[in-house]
Length: 294
Image (cartoon, rainbow, N blue to C red):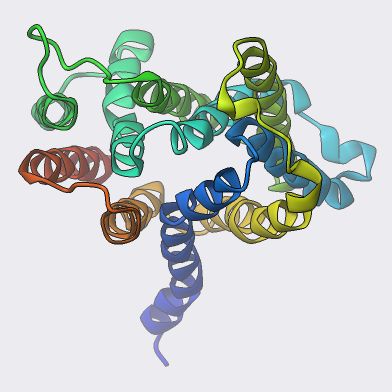
């Protein structure tokens, strides 16, 4: 075996892990919908999933030195955790395909944020990514009154979640952690806090997100799904991101869009028309342009 072969083999497992995690996140909507159909609102599901994430990271944080940089990581965690909480509830409040595609506007917001906040140069490729991203947004949402506006609250939350995710990833890139456990804990703690706020607001407004009449009977299933679909991908993606370059991570995570849109079209009966197809192609292309540029 040559040195090149050894280098490729070392990257094969992390790359496979990221691709599998993307596929799992693409199917994340399915257990959410199944649990919600049994009378447990998405607010409770998000809260419990984040509690599981915190508990799973604690065994690696028993040493005081493991908490070094917690302040920075907590800011990152609030941004990323809030993004994932909003994305989770959006999956039960709007069409799955819309939620996934609107969340994947993230590279567009990252490009705008880098330009506005960090004075990054708007190159030709970046401008092309922005144009394609917004064109895809218009195709997915439709143009009402001349603007591509969210059709409902779920669409709005999915769009906002992508903005929070972009802010969190930009900050994480500039203030990285030394290990994996602390970012996972901070991410889950941020998600737990935001999920609590979402749950309280939903309860005050009598939204189905706060429904909990079957919470105790469904608790074993919620924990099982959380341990399968939430906890492992968080650790695996952060582990893999320290072993392969960020551009490759971004490309491999596109399996989420593929599995999410296809599974929703097949299993949920959601319409996948020409406009959604065009929007998907444009948004994914915009993301790939930004990923390859990086």
